[in-house]
Image (cartoon, rainbow, N blue to C red; front, side):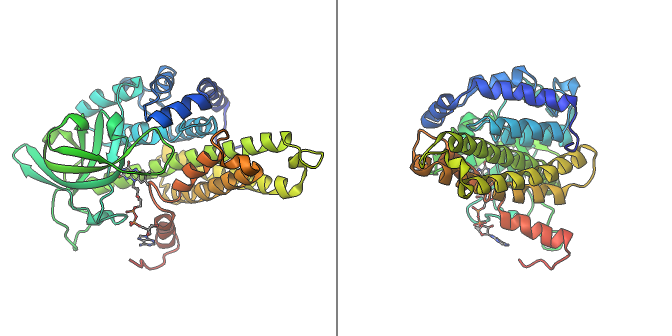
Length: 388
Ligand SMILES: Cc1cc2nc3c(=O)[nH]c(=O)nc-3n(C[C@H](O)[C@H](O)[C@H](O)COP(=O)(O)OP(=O)(O)OC[C@H]3O[C@@H](n4cnc5c(N)ncnc54)[C@H](O)[C@@H]3O)c2cc1C
């Protein structure tokens, strides 16, 4: 029996599989081609309560945990398109961040709207010069009475065009090497596309997503004091707390994507006949698919373990990072093998496997790179010296 599986989890799987099945490849293809938000899909998830899965019932959510969220993301990703990864920006970053660190007023305002499907988030952390080194971010929010004035730039920010709110990470004090984790603050910026002081330029990225990526420039954006999430200057602790859920959510998405690649490879290998029998009868085709499936099953156990630990309030950094590493690698490999199984068809738009590979390959780099995940494991678990 898989860790934490229960009747409730079976019901959740069945329900979200049903939703995923209503939105076929055509639906996703159209939204990805036209770069439009999949509103009907989003609303179907909200109507069945899944966008508010971890949100407490008093704010209109289901009051469940990261294990249930992971199962939902996995099943939606297995259903195709951008079905699962869509969760990471809003229910994970917005929902969990505010649920854990928001004021009462923020919880009342944002959580009910997230659960209802009325509110979508984007997340602005990455900067052109700082890159992976978050401590080096330069976007600065200068206090001016009960407001802050923000100047700086962010890059690769996804989905700003669809966002009702932006989770913005900015410096509020200069970097101090004697206290390096101090001085960063998180802000919730409402209606980012309608605000004075924010300008966007679209980046030309290759990912097959309905969301666009942007370079975001801040020139004198004003943000109110009550839009600080958590404490002023204490944003890094909050960010790191939320990042474990982002790693778990990302891992669930890579797991589901990898399983979808395998499902499609199995279907194709069972149908396609070349030398008088299905190609799936050849072990050269069969074994790589079976091996990828085995790797994904093993990665799933560590993902569920990490999610369960998070739900029980235990430290889950190791499991979240290991799950992220293993699912991104095993998922990409599964998609690569699915392409090989499809022969020339693997490179056509008619079949989905090349898109899946692109999505899964990205999970090795974003939202966090596998090198940084390995750095975490090496330093925090194995006690090796920090090299950077
Ligand atoms: C499609 C897409 C969507 C994105 N969406 C968002 C978003 O919505 N919000 C947001 O804030 N960001 C977003 N990002 C940014 C993404 O999180 C970063 O690209 C990613 O974290 C890597 O940062 P970087 O590109 O600056 O790489 P760099 O920091 O320049 O690193 C380049 C390479 O060097 C490696 N490296 C760097 N330092 C070390 C070290 N100490 N040890 C070992 N290896 C190292 C990295 O792992 C990486 O492989 C998105 C990116 C993409 C491509």
